[in-house]
Amino acid sequence: MRIGNTGNVGIGTSTLDGRLTVASTTQLSLTTGGDFIIGSKAGQNMAFNYNVIQGRYGVAANGLFLNYYGGSVWIGNHKGDGSLPVFYASPGGSAAVGSSNYNPNYALTINTSLAGSGIFVTDPYNGYILSANNSSSFAFPFSSTIPRLSICQSSILLAST
Image (cartoon, rainbow, N blue to C red; front, side, top):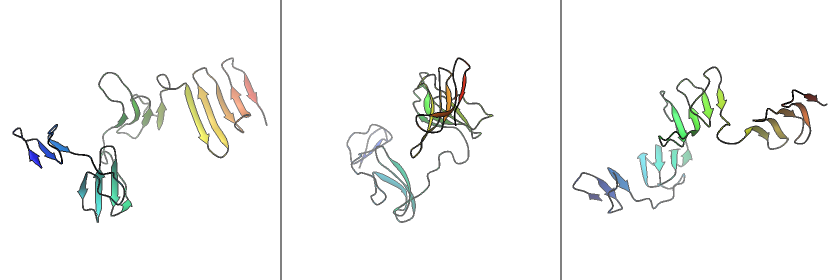
């Protein structure tokens, strides 16, 4: 361990890049320690390494809560340059994908203007369930190839059995 003259601390490293710098050398799993642990390894704990945060109870996976008592959760890009998050959860419980702009009257708002061309809901066993895209097409398929109901940009309603 090293303590620099500015008060920065290094563990396993001589480079004191931040207030606390820990060398990342241990792969994290349910049974290994990772780089550091908050809590007892035998009880409830949260383990960290360079790209994993894991809630655990002993050697079993445990829940990990972000902002349990409120506040927004932003996952993905947040550089302060107008970049949008991959996922945003509002303090009121609404969620947004592709934007932090959400409609509080709906549980989920999806912004497809910046990423992708629409919404695609899939069932891995039976094919896709719903698709909607930016060219005003919307379909509820019966199978992955034959839609049961399709509404396209030209206001044509196609239905099949």
